[in-house]
Amino acid sequence: MDSKEYIASGILELYVAGSLSEKENQEVYEAMQKYPEVLAEVESIENAIVQLTAFAKKDSTYSFNDIKNQLKVDEHKVIPISKPKSNWGLYTGWAAAFIFGSTLILSVLQNNKLKNQLASEKELLEAQIDSASTNLAAAEKLIEIFRDKDIISVSLAGQTVSPTSYAKVYWNKKTNSIYLDAKGLPEPPKGKVYQVWSLTLDPLSPTSLGTLDSFTADTNKIFTIYNANKSEAFGITLEPTGGSLSPTLEQLYTLGAVSS
Image 1: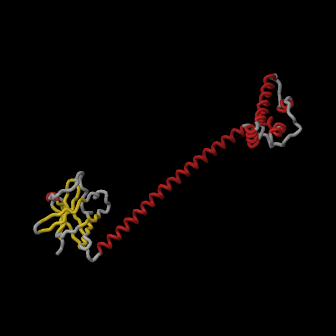
Image 2: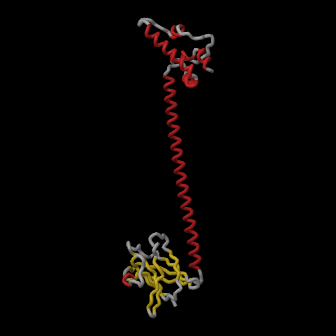
Image 3: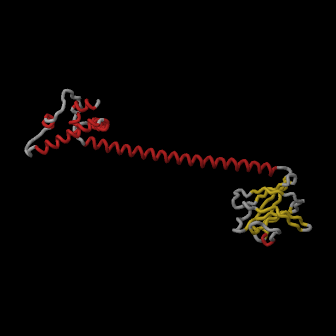
């Protein structure tokens, strides 16, 4: 309906009287928001009722029809309406809508939170899979290296300062590469680092092969080291950070001779 039809229908009077259904109340409310003249008419009806009530005698009984007859409204067109209901229907309707809306918003927020959580878990899982794939590839490469016929295996036993320590060197003389398995060494104390040495025995001459700076961070404790020396033995000492020019024999953790 347009504004004129609303005003002429008589439904606005019923709205003011609280005799419309919840749906009809909502429709009138929307019409009031849309048409200023409908809002003005509702206000006019409310003012008329207030005035009539003020002048009415205390013992007088006014029905809604009495009030309606005193208003200047065009009643040539009346739109049928459903069974009148208490105005509480409007309030309960709005309350229900508010509760529904709040529940819907909460549901959306929870859904978004779940989506974000699933996305985070997916990223974590993908990272774990990538890490596992990388570790698997590295493990397969090591297996190939250890099975190489040119590889020499040298066991390094624990020494006086740390009898329970151990390590193993896999040396490929053709590629001048050493693969050091240092899993059997304890974590170095702060300010200290493990240093690997190549040794010739007659005369005893140590040559540094470098320090294991990433020992703590490396999970597998497998290190690749270049060695072009004619090594007869290998040793690992604990040195100050940065390494030493010569091994500190009092801090010799492991030692092993190359089999002839």
